Figure 1 (cartoon, rainbow, N blue to C red):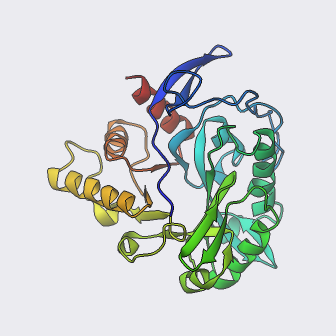
Figure 2: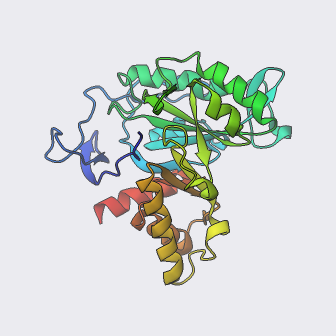
Amino acid sequence: MRTPRPRHALVPVALAGAALLVPLSAGSAVAGTRPVAADPVVLGAATSPAAPAAGPVVAQPLPQAHAHNDYEHERPLLDAVERGFTSVEADVYLVDGQLLVAHDPEDLDPARTLQSLYLEPLEDLAEAGGGSLYGDGEPVQLLIDIKGDAVATWLAIEDVLAQYPTTMTSFTMTDAGYDATPRAVTAVVSGNRPVDLMARDHLRWSAYDGRSGDLFNGSDPDFMPLVSDNWANQFSWRGEGEMPAAERAKLVDFVTAAHLAGREVRFWNTPDAPGPARDAVWSELVAAQVDQINTDDLDGLRDFLLARSQA
């Protein structure tokens, strides 16, 4: 059975003249801190989105940082990883047998495939990190949002993920449910996902992103490790003034229920324009222990999480 990733406290550590954060956990070299890889991976100045990472990621992981529509950044994946993000999101379309990454059909480019933008550089980073991107033994998440036909696209995703068996987490059906074999990257499918087909598959390379209505459906957490929802479907508060007490209680109850079921929580469509309203919503998400904070502003969320850890 899967439990949500632990939310470690963070402590500042000086490295190469920069203040970094190390997640706190038991048994680390620094009292109460999570061990840092001896040879962290540093990303080179790639000029192409698909250029491989080359050398030490200096950033330490930020467990709550999720890069929404990550492929729209100048360097997909690499910009997020350099800032410590532990989850990235890619929208995919199945076109002539290829999984192309884009938000809208008019933006499709045959050179921008799931493999070139994500799977190949993720494999390189995992190898450089000794089996994990940040050298800490913790998986990162690749959230794949299926556009178009659910069944055909998911089957194509599974075929492609299976080509990276030493990098991708796998899920095997057993008499007791599912057994996950964690590896450097855990793929979770969102958008148009074929739940019945996925639930019948005896070996999967991706997990299922549920919605709020799925929270109590009894699914194995190794089948549905994540529950995501549109913030506006659940809450009216957008960061102006105090969060209503009833909505704060609803948020806490939702997250608590998800964690008891072994699932993580993510909301999309939260305020993302820089300013007090966004900071107020992010503060409530952190206080409620929401596992993944959704943003298009990589620097903004990184700076927010680092500042809170040092407060």
